[in-house]
Amino acid sequence: MSDPNPTVTPKTRPSFADLPLHPTLRQGVAEMGYTEPTPIQRGTIPHAVRGRDLIGTAQTGTGKTAAFLLPILERLLSRPRGRVYALVLTPTRELALQAEGFLRRLGRHTRLRGAAVYGGVGMADQERALRGAAEIIVATPGRLLDHMERGYVDFGSLEVLVLDEADRMLDMGFLPDVRRVLSRLPRDRQTMLFSATMPPEVVRLSQEFLRDPHIIRADAPTVAAVGVAHHAVSVPAERKTDALVALLRKPERTSVLVFVRTKHRADRVAHQLERAGTRVAVIHGNRSQAQRVRALEGFRQGRSRVLVATDIAARGVDVEGVSDVVNYDVPHEPETYVHRVGRTARAQRRGDALTLIAPDEAQDFRRIEQLLGFSVPRDLAGELPEELARSVRASEPRPARTWSRAPSPRPPLHAPSDSGARPPPRRPGPRRW
Image 1: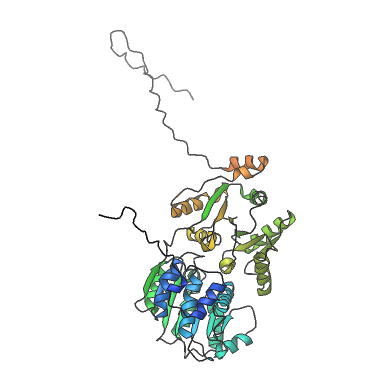
Image 2: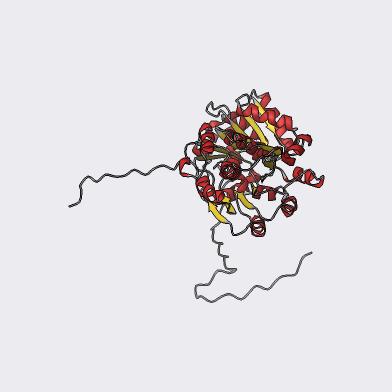
């Protein structure tokens, strides 16, 4: 007879202790406040530690950086210092600095050193790192090629190559530079490719440079991050800043990342928000490296409540606790929307994605909704002042009218006689000019 009250063994939650990592690395992970590995980390680290080529697809904010840095550190713990063993290619200097910062914190209890190589700063310190002052290099393709063409690089001991944000490198036109870099690296190496999406060009790149890769799909590559609540409002283009100022009046919107399409618009929107009394920072490609670092640090530390950014510049924005992402401009590509909104609800938190839709952007937003698989509620109008709300209602697209009125029958030229016989046709009279 079966026990009426069987003992149920609870499911154990995944832990970094389950992964093949040295205790010094687990200590670094714990000091960063991470207790449970993300799906991309659980799927990647065991294979990467064994040296296998792999492709990882997962959304922004799901832990891809630690997914490739931890196995690199694990593999290189016993290597002698003074040689470059690992190279990470990233599309922007912000991402390079972000990855190098993660590397420093994860490997703080090891003897391994990292360095970031990117444009806009001097080359002397980077040259020393590339000649062996760091074992792990994180670089943007353009600046790395500058060093390679000057003969400043010794990759003879390279064991691991990582292509991070491969789809964004493609979007930014770096694919030829990436191919040039890869053609000059040792062929006997481990290669890992990480991307949020897998367009055909990235697939071809992986087929060309990876050997029998293991594929890890942590989640559907075209679904926005879990934990994001999507909201939208239709608003005339010239009233977008007024709508943004009104939305920022909500006190719980404490850390807001605003995406715009161009550098000029980023400066203009930031200036308008400053005039409205909002503490704001701005980041785009025309800002110097020092300005970009100050803007990011001010946003991280709460000195700036709002950060206005273009898509390319914001690829390296890794800020915990972003409460809201605002799409001031609707992106042309639905995948860009996915990248943007992934900046909130990071590390399994929750956040809001707010979109301001001008009439000429309605079609682009419909394509985004098709990608998401649901209609985003237009529920932000209630937060706007009445005068602006009237403009919003006037700008909302009206459903197309359908006409079903049947054509009126033509009356007969001559009424029928009682007998039913038709009268003879009337002869036309003379034409008058």
